[in-house]
Length: 310
Image (cartoon, rainbow, N blue to C red; front, top):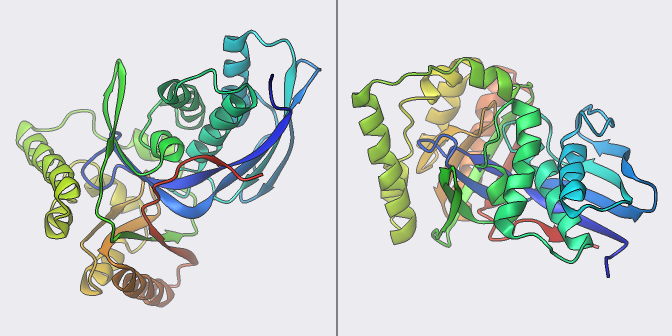
């Protein structure tokens, strides 16, 4: 017997995590999107309202929630429909997995309504359809942590293979979001399609080092493995004051910093809450000096992904 109505939440996420373009991501705490979803006898998807951040379409064919929900209803061969009310806690184009949170919370909520007919990996695949609509690419490095929680690695896309990575208890993330919109599609289009082998080898070494550091609770190894030699040199040019922000974070004690997703948000990994708060203060001071409007978040890496909240 299906449930009739639920409310669910999906957290924001940081993807790429420096060296892990399209394969690494982790869930944040508290910040995210929520969705009220109700089964109806009328066929089709109705997006009744979108509240909070952003100016998004309520057309289900142009909204990630509608695309994900329709694919799931089609797979279930369900003749009825759904009413959706989305509350955005993440600004679109922020680099904090805005479209991923909306896609993930929809996949999770539909699955809950129908008493969990799909596996967690299938939910990631459904949520990736929303990412394809939003950015043109069906990547999983935001939707996987949003759904599953914690730190994840996408080992393979064909077939999809996702690994949960353990991480140190005192690993915190500080994020500054300069209030400019940077569309994922734009920040993907500027990337080079070919990489010199020497550069790729350096990048592989850092991915290996970061994973090893997470497994072994080696904070220093985590910090020195975050450097991205491929994507950051190009995308950082689109983010005002990027070098000054990351330098301020380093001086405040951050293990390392990078671009969150496609930007413009900048993240720093820190050992302990006190250091994470120091980095937040450094971010704030530097952004004020540069005249940038901004939001700052301090978060533990969240072990929880999507969940029912009502």
